[in-house]
Length: 158
Image 1 (cartoon, rainbow, N blue to C red):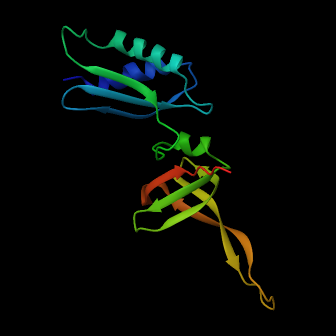
Image 2 (image 1 turned 90 degrees about the vertical axis):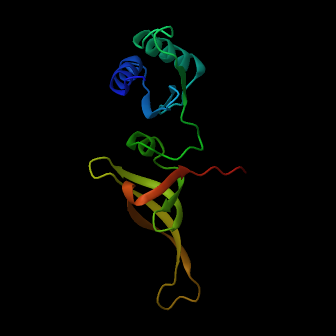
Image 3 (image 1 turned 60 degrees about the vertical axis):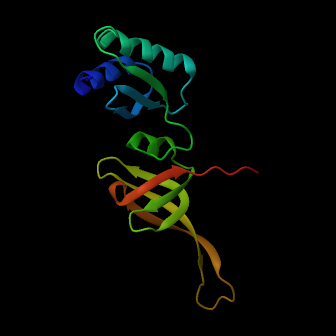
């Protein structure tokens, strides 16, 4: 079985200076290793290949231990898993699914890594006193990351 502590150290060493961050590392019981990475500018194939080679150099040889290794981008439709993904998507529209079942869509306006929370601006109809019709105003909503089942970027094609 692959030592997860050594694997994490190998991954952290492999990404140094590359401008990428780890979103997830999984190891199946069959030693199938999947490393998901991301960056502010996206991840290209050459970066993934270089990181794969560096990780393999740190792991036992395949003669000693049989494993598969996949290094790839977290994907543009993948839910956010780490604070850096929230920061990367500041100013973009996101969909929040809370653990209590609410679904809220708005623009990500703030991220606080220290408190593991974020704020989105939600367009809401508000009727001003004396007005005949409601107007749409952006209302901030605050969320704790651990109170959310899923947060992901919303793509709209025009």
